[in-house]
Image (cartoon, rainbow, N blue to C red; front, side):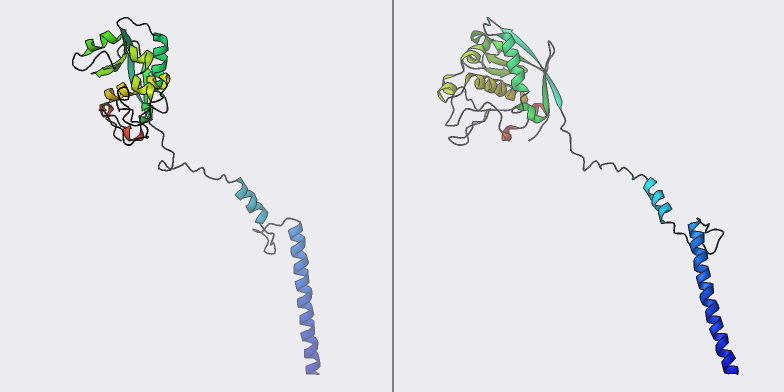
Length: 241
């Protein structure tokens, strides 16, 4: 009898456990369906994923500034002012002269590669570019200038009008154009003002340094109106290569 009643008791406990578990499950589902409150109801198990996702979605991502050492460097531009004047009887077009001088000085192929911008001013420029009648060129310096070529004396860059209008025998014979000669002579004489001396042809067939005396002799090099990479410095401005 004891064994019989014991078995019945065990079966009853198991049945009550199943019913209880089922009841709890149903209750939890109902509570979840009715949006229960976890803080006050121990049987509430409603997941909070959706609310957390909404919170995360509302958080703005921080904006990170680019570190200075990663930002691309901006080339510094230094301004150099110059004034244009004439001396003697000038028959060349002065307006054209001014325009072509400015074009040459600020060309991306020229001395502007030093990070310099050349600005014309009516008076008081850091240096003066002269368009001079050939016979008047020696008046700037009897020992340093002559009637044949252009020259630079102190803060005076003197362009010989005869050369400006005609180029030179050596340049023309090498196939150089008049426009390129004008680029070259302005760059060459301005190069002297910047602190350059004369250069020489490195090898036959190579572009001549702009500081070579291309007006007089090409030395086997080809005509070149622009400063070479090796000439990219300016002692006058404290700019080193």
